[in-house]
Each structure stands twice: as C-alpha cells, then as structure tokens.
Amino acid sequence: MSSAKPLIGITGDFRPERYDGAALSWFNTGYYDSVLAAGGLPVLLPPYDNEEDLVRMMEQLDGVVLSGCNLDLDPTRQKMHPHPATKIMPKRREDFDRRVAEIAIRRGIPVLGIGSGMQLVNVLCGGNLYQHIPEDIPRAIHHRDPVEKNLRHVLEIVPGTRVDSIYGPGEVRVNSNHHMAIRDLASRFRVSATCPDGVIEAYESVDADWFCLGVQWHPESSTASALDLQIFEAFVEASEVWMQRRNEAPAGSQDAAEMDVRDILPMTSSLQKAA
Image (cartoon, helix red, strand yellow):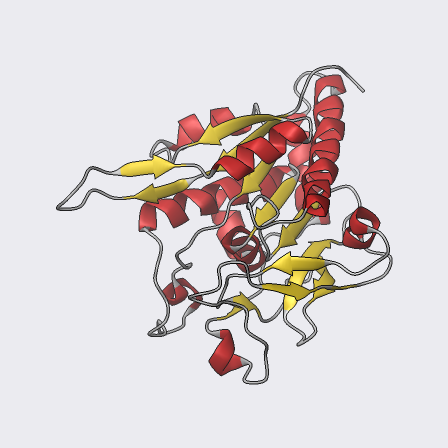
C-alpha cells in the first residue's frame, strides 16, 4: 500500500438561519477522530449549493462517510405522511447528502453510512423505511430512550458477512438512538446484522468490488465500544484500495469506470436523473 492516506469526505450537520441565530454547519468530533484513528485523512463537506463544486470535490475523494443526524429524513419524499414523532432535517442538509450519496453510488466510491446516512443510501437504491418503530413494529424492543442516552442492545450478526469479519466471535452490543428503520432492503444489499427483534441494524453491498456498509448504530459516538473502531478501519482499508486503483488507472478512464459501475449496480430513477 502507498504511504499516502486516503481522503475521506464526511457530511456534516446543518441548521438554517433562525430568529435567534445565524445559519450553522457543524461536525461531531467522533467522525473525523475515528477516520484519523483508522488511518484516513478526513475532509469535512459543508452543504455546497453549487453542483460543479461538489462534483470537483468528489473527484478527489477515496471514501465517503454519510453521517447521522438527530433529525429525520423527510418521509414525504418516500410518499409517506409525516408521523407526529418525526422531526424533519433541514432540506439543505438532506438535499446535499442525497447528492453526495448519488455520486458515490454512481462511481462506486467506498461508502460508510451511519444512522440516517445508512437509511438514505437504502432509499436511494430502491429500499424503504419504517417511519416509527413503536407503531410499525409493535413487538420491537426500545431503540430510542429520551432519558437513557447510553441505550444499548445485542447485535445478531449474520455469519459470513463483512460485519462478521469485522467484529469476529463473541457478543457484540451497540448503542441505539433511532425511531426510523429499514423496512425493505434494496436489492443491491444484503443484511449483515439485526437486533433480536428483527430490525435491520447493518447491511452491505452484494457487489464485492464496491465497499458499501450501512450501520444503524453510531460507531463514532462516545457511547460506542472500542470494537466499533474496526468499522472505520475496514472502511479506510477499502478506501486505500480505491485510492490505489484510481491512481493506477490510465488517464481518461474515469468515464469507463463509471459505466462499469452502472452495469453492475442498476440505477434508480433518482440516480439516473443525477447522472
């Protein structure tokens, strides 16, 4: 491997201007600290308005972390009426995350989706979501507690998956703070882990040449275990492979590489429009 570190883009949070304050962007420290600890070089991505600027930046990246959010994806974009418990994230935030994800999917750039980031990738690839676990899955355990911020549950990891190879044998417990969850998983993914109640907690790409891992828990959080850093290590390792392959590709071969990704990963109408 080259001594150069892969450049890892990280999406951040956003709050529009309001009566008592200016518009803000911020990035939870755990995301970039975890990327650094795993051997990557983090690149913080504010929500660009200009498409050409974003495309130019994405051309430089070797991996993308689609970060989570305390707010929710807009259910109306999935033809659902908002549930009273749903708190929709700012449109500029979701629009930007969608554009980043679409470019990464189209190009086959390694992706680590966390929390709402993993939900978004599934939706863009043709899957859908439960909007409110307590009502949609009445027998589910608690996945979010307004008081207990260190809520955890056991993972049931599917043998032979990437998540299985990352964590290895033994009981794994992860943090939990969500009320939306994956309902139908997009066909280009397979389930990597579930909660004992059956809620999908992790998925991975069925295409061995594209590293895409989505986790519902937050491995970057201060409530994560030491084992969770291995998620970032596996992701950065895949990004190193992407970086090496990109650097060795003949000049002018990028368009051909994108076409190969389209052939392997059939695009949804959303992605076709972005292309």
